[in-house]
Length: 313
Image 1 (cartoon, rainbow, N blue to C red):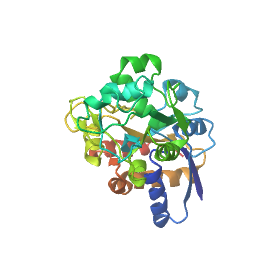
Image 2 (cartoon, helix red, strand yellow):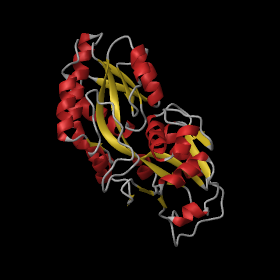
Image 3 (cartoon, helix red, strand yellow):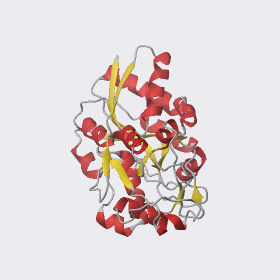
């Protein structure tokens, strides 16, 4: 039996591992997952052209109201959005919120700008134009990044705001996390934002980011877990964890969700999907750390499993 899903590229590395592993648990089920971006995942679940959607931004009230039935948000893992760049010698950089906002607003145009130099004393910064790379598709990675920027920069909030796609003040577009990492990698002077695993797999440098406690933090499993621990998680599981308070928390982090109808149209498929979700939220969570994603805290896992029990065939 084929279960079809579409959406986020942010969790694609972990989801593809889950789908492969699950085939050993239940050989009767195969997953066909199209990594097309969160915007596409939300559209397809609304249109009921897939059995599940995937998104790193929760669906808005407006979008949920358009759905022909009740859609449940099933959080799976959390990850980091990192700022990756292409500079000769790949120097380690530290960036604060103002500088990041300035770069993506297009007001900081050169690598040796005093704002970048201020947090990177002793680093040789070239007199080179900054080439901003952003997503061209509807993207949850963009949602997490712009949600962060809107919290830390009133200028950003008024000019571009937060959404799965925004009107970018500067730069060139790439499709998917794959596209952005590819563009940055081949463009000297480029800077872009991608999910952590894409930077690691492409051996690209990424900046330490100043968090709300005033510390420069590297994106790691631990710093994402610290951010997730402070998230205020409501009953419907639609939450944001950017700019999290507290020591050790990485500020540009977010969860990712599977989007599933509470009332399943096809009972046989629905039953198999529920079995998979229960496996993913227990056995699957244990695989997250190998790919640098943070698993859900035990308490949240239990609540999400209860929600999965509410899916009806």
